[in-house]
Image (tube, rainbow, N blue to C red; front, top):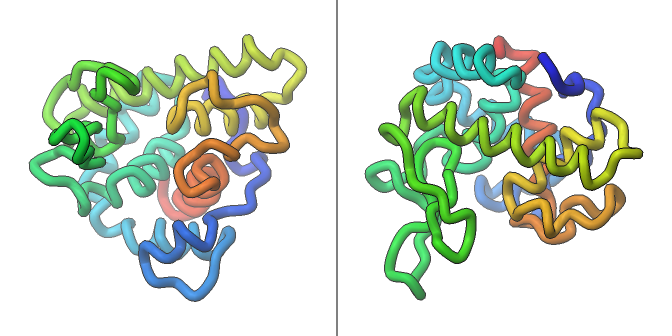
Length: 193
């Protein structure tokens, strides 16, 4: 793959708040691994699509699976493909397994393909690749692993909200987005992705 090896990216894993989604009595890498494993049965439905998109986009399939796990619990929390209900807009903010942001005040993307399609996964993975590139340009002194982790954080909140590596998740959902996704990706990497 054209990016750093996900196995080499440092991570603290899920926050307590994220772990509480599954009523876990713990946080950290162990919590991320537990949630990834919980989603693994549903994730297997999308494995061939994930591998195809990973190959096309040069992104580790384990990372794509991890974002799917974090964003939609492998489709389990979606409503007809939609997620992230916004009561102020009276509409959903995001589309598909990887939750492409369609909110005009957010990412402003137009949803492409069916919610569980390769077209959707290509769009979302392309957005991730774009953010990794932006982080690479914004922080040229960072390592490849740091660029990858910063790009994952930016996928959640935009590159304008990534100000330093030490606080890469300061503005992300749960305060742990990239750390949780990296830990889930490491679990998927060891378990068939």
